Length: 330
Image (cartoon, rainbow, N blue to C red; front, side, top):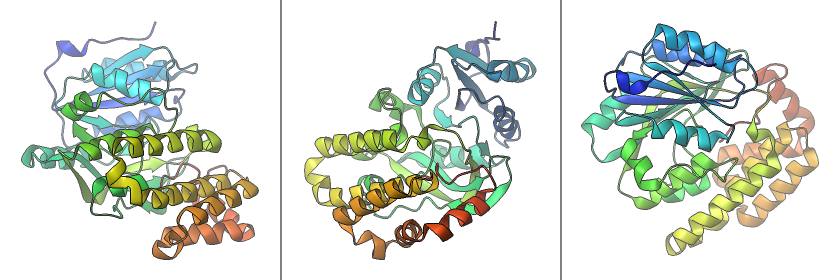
């Protein structure tokens, strides 16, 4: 029987860190160690064991026994959105931090973001630049800058999830209550859906911190590997955003779809599906071909798809054998 601790028995923390965990026995200790090393110490960690079939729960138990701030919550498997919602509903902190079990925070992550949230009431979400790390934890030269491509956060988020990945944002608990949580019917793009809803409200600012404060692990397995499933979910999210804010976003939608199909082309390329990558590039060009001369990353993707004999070995070299760029959200 996995150790289950009662968070309500401990002092109220400033931040609740939600760690969804499904079959991550190999990685989760690094994630939890990065929390122990935080300079901001008023936090609780809610590790949501989402029906793991490996030794994830057993790997977490010693952390809960050593540190009363760590709590293991177990539930039947329901997916990432379900795990995040489950953890947040049990959270006691004013602020919510999301940390996937295979990623890591740098020591100043919580302190830097909490200070911004405490001193700027108009800010609802804080995030930072991220460093890509390999499957074995070694750093790469790759980063996710988090720079929006438009001054309006809704239009910017439609085109690119500038927060970048699921372990980057720290936000006010009140936003979760207002939005109603992550959409559990989505098996991909659930974070994009959530941020779009926040941006639509317009009541809180997104704040980008220019330092690298978290590390995003690219590993050979994961939800993003199902490119077709990501296409299905992403198109659903974009259509829902259009339905909610039709007049505001109408003219941006072709560009939004172009960026989305460009992303799928990159994922297909690194999934060793060259014809599918070409198909997505063609969709991107048809939606808004101007992104390929206006956005350097888009141009690089276009070149990579058409020069795959060169680009695929470079991808493998960047992330070491058996790794993939497939999870890269930018």
